Length: 368
Ligand code: EPU
View (cartoon, rainbow, N blue to C red):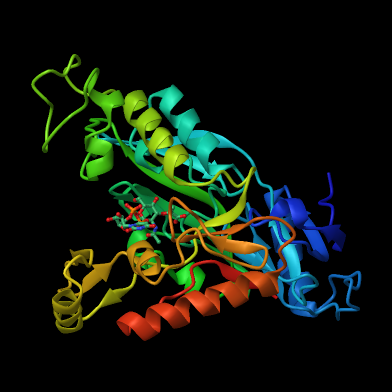
């Protein structure tokens, strides 16, 4: 069968971004990997019409969109949007110690984690309920509850759209850092991630470094844990993978707003990482400051705490606000546009900068 060329057409993105911002753009849907080489050629030749809603040129830059959970979408972006809808999960290989599981980039992340758990491919439970797609996971190196994606990654199969070549990138080639990667730094139009492979340990042990998780009553039967290990009254010997998964889902549901109910893009800022000297000075002035020493000697601060201290927790500006239970999450109370979101982000950043001298970096990318 000949490969159908991708066609861009005007589409509504309102339901395709978890902040729920209104937008119309020229969108093509990629649901078959075999269309990628022709896409590369067409991009190089500047012929991937039709013209977008603003009368965009056919060579308007490309923006690769996954689940839309880490993006602030302008009403009429100048970019053309390639929405990745590639599906499929399979056991790709195994070694003596690991299952190597491969998932297509368009698979919804949480469904993938759940599927792995049901097949006995363990080790992703701490990353349950994170919105977005498998392909977006390496872009921002998702992390939660004591686990970062790069710790479970085997490789990323991605097309470099500029060179029109497919690569298999190993973790040390992906430029991972806290909430950052080569794919993010190079911009949302360069790398088209097609598949992601995970190395999941055959010998599973729970990762319970994060205190809220370690102490979750669902892991230990009645009463919950205290301290750093199994509590004396625990009814089970050790938590099962499903218990860890359920506990992570429970913690997230309690703290974080469901984007289906209240539009949001998760953490709107990264936790800032500053010099040890600056952190020590701040700690003197603000003894309650939350500080997390990093391996490189620098110190990570809790952005949610900083934002709460300057009074933005639960406070609104127009149709948007910072969430009442987690100040790091910017929410759309209804009817917001990108400009409202960016105005609030500027106000919060300015107040944190004024009080603490710390610059907050926005986490979601802007589709303009
Ligand atoms: N805090 C406050 N006020 C707030 C929020 C947080 O004082 O309104 C304090 C907490 O008391 C705690 C500290 O800040 O001492 C850290 O808070 P939390 O454990 O909730 O985690 P976080 O640093 O705010 C990060 C990730 C989350 C992830 C959690 C759990 C980033 C930018 N965010 O949040 O990721 O779920 O850790 O691992 O690193 C996301 O990216 O969308 C996301 C939710």
